[in-house]
Image 1 (cartoon, one colour):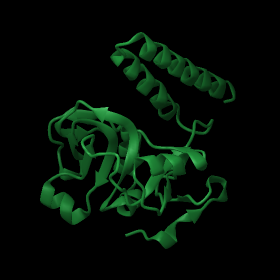
Image 2: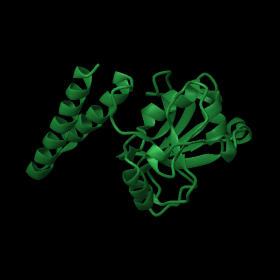
Image 3: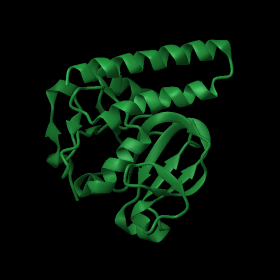
Image 4: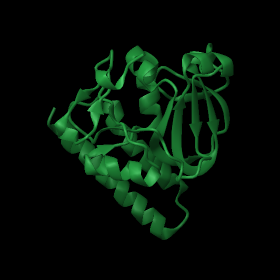
Amino acid sequence: MATKAALTQSSKFGEFALAPSSSNSRVYTLDREANYKKSKAFLDESLLTPFGPHEILRILRKDESLMAFFSGKGFYVAGAGTEMHGIYTVKPNGSLEEGRGGSFEDTIRVESGDNPLILFVYSNHDAKFNNRRYNLLGSFEPVWTAPMVVGRPRLSIDEPVDDRLYAIEVAAANLRKSDTKLNLEQRLAELSKNTSDLIDLLRQE
């Protein structure tokens, strides 16, 4: 199992360190306990952003080193709440499909709620016992203390386009849920900014 010593230090992102990866994925972690507010502050200070749940699940499914590193740990991911609830299959692209996966390795339990999302990665022993590798929870209060903070660099030109599109997908989903004029204006501004950022980045490639 990967240890703290296996991390690669990166002064570019403050105290955050690059987690060991067999797929060259850029996953940065901070070995500090933090609730949601502190996790967000640590990420903001280091110019990092939390992974979307689909992003990090896609990476974990193909990366044995990261899976071993996060075994038995939980951390905050992007997103405030979910209406999904039950057992789902984690598809290769990280999206979720209702129903149990072919094995515990691609099975996740999702708990609905309006709170910041938390992803738990079970250890091998617990995954086999519970017949699933992950829990994605929107039911925990944001005062819950995660054992570490996890994030990735903000939009950059060397990320796959599908990762950059995640921010736009989130903004679009929130826009569809808007029920007031104020919310609609805020979501439109958010969607416009993310789209503009993506276009600027694509022009540099």
